[in-house]
Image 1 (tube, protein in one colour):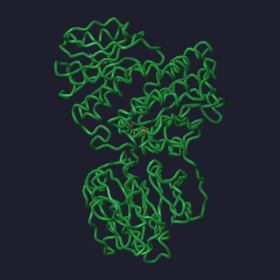
Image 2 (cartoon, helix red, strand yellow; image 1 turned 120 degrees about the vertical axis):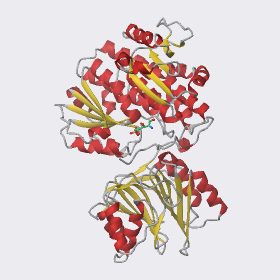
Image 3 (cartoon, protein in one colour; image 1 turned 135 degrees about the vertical axis):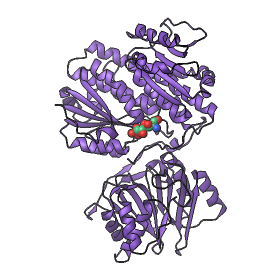
Image 4 (cartoon, protein in one colour; image 1 turned 90 degrees about the vertical axis):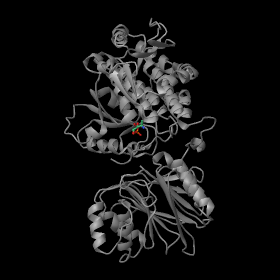
Length: 610
Ligand code: M6R
């Protein structure tokens, strides 16, 4: 986690760095800092506890000049959030910012202490500063010193370093955490995410694992892990420039919830005709691979894991292909068995989640027929390291609570499942046409779900003073309930759990009382009557029920049960549809509670550390 920005320019860079940090704040927001040097080797370091705004105010108070600088917004791993632990860290003339974790920092700390270095923070980053300072004493250049230091570091990191005495040069090293270089005219930039730099450039180059780059105003030289000079591809970005703006919305999360109809149109564009899925549009060799798939292994974390859990029902029901879904942090550490002709799918909004990336790297050695990622960020590590990248094209997601990434992942998987079924002769052209019709209807369907905003806002009052909430669903609505519970706890800090409704009687029923709202997701499907029995089990024990029910489902409202009648939608896409009122519910509960909706406590958007 943590966000890094760097710049080498003729002009003063303080404003560029701060704007970049603002756009990266989703990566961490407990403290922030900059170090800027001018041509006369005058160094200014400013650090503040709290959000980037605190830093920005402090910079405004002083007139900070200098054309070379590095900046950082932090998500604490080693050492509490504090000004002392905030980056940049300094050793002699060396300034450093760092994203990731240095696993052998304790051993290095002892070595460096023995050499006479004093540590002032509890961070692992400070060892990089001292190590580079030490190596520079015998190296012929800062780059050489960084390369020697990097060879001693274990862990996953991205780090940027400058030497006050050489004030027009930055050196950056990538090992496990993303770094993108941005090219300007007579000035160059770098960041953890291109989003940070879209206001200054559109030309980008991603560093690869083990790369070290040296950057001046005029040139960028890249060296691979062997120290050989290499060329990396330069791309022209078409990412939205204003993705970092909330527009008319109060929060990014709200904006992103309301963007879902457009996001879904992006996901389906060029991938479906009026009645069929274009298998080739899924990726290179998709027809060949999908026609042979016998098993699917999905790996993901958080919201992406929940979408995999929901899609599992489709893989088995529609495509007739067995499917396992596992949390990446578990998968990566267990001895798993690879099934024959198994397709590995990683799901991720960011494409940088450390556990998912590590799981992919391990799995790639273990005989999967291909590795596909369903991802939202082009150029991300998962995209670059997978055989097939099926992009969700949801547009930049900034709110820490993932919303449009979830629904677009589901839409992408519905297309994938249909393509597999079709290529294997299990989905007839009639069935394919029915699914595709439902996919086409999604944007309008989601608009109709968004129209419940006001009604759900009123309902949210009932939840805001509660300490716990239970979400119930059956079949593919169980993972939708899991996602609803994750959203509520994440942004409102209310403890929430999801249960497969049939499981209630095996324990959780004991929790039911008048202080525990129970939210039920009740589409009109084959399991409706079973679900109704579960609802009665709650009612009989004095539970407080909120049932989001298909208008034809036949629920009747009374004192103990509020019914929110939802329009009848296609059973195929209904899991996506029912997600939206759940997102709105958590958003409005969080608003009433006054929490930090876009940047909830203790969390960060891209979890690039283990
Ligand atoms: O970028 P990813 O989809 O790989 O991220 C996975 C999780 O960290 C993420 O979904 C997290 O659970 C969200 N904050 C949930 O809203």
